[in-house]
Image (cartoon, rainbow, N blue to C red; front, top):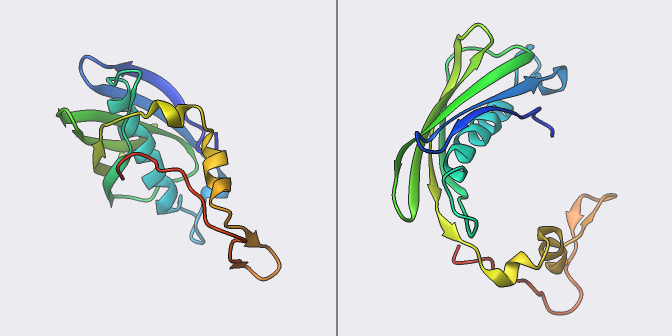
Length: 161
């Protein structure tokens, strides 16, 4: 996995999770810190699974809102994510967490909202990559533009987004 995700501990009853990531030199910005987008992705991959661990087999929970505050620069190496469910309802979960370095210094904090959705059995049989291909939007690498699809645009409806 790109972020070097490692599940360290999860407690669905308490709604908590602890994960680790490996920030490599490829994640660095021009001044030598881990780029904030990677840190935000790590926090999303910390908070979301805290909620997912409590879901039934026919449920999923896409993040609909993610707020991140960056408190100090992160350096390459192991970063630890601590996530928790603040409140869970039938259709929505409120999440919070932080990302620390190995010494325990807080690098960034985040809050998130996730919608709890029920899967559509019809979509389970269709791989996501096939759904994306059904859109028939193809990037032309030589000019970097999207070309118009040939014929009618087809897509599969993905729930009630």
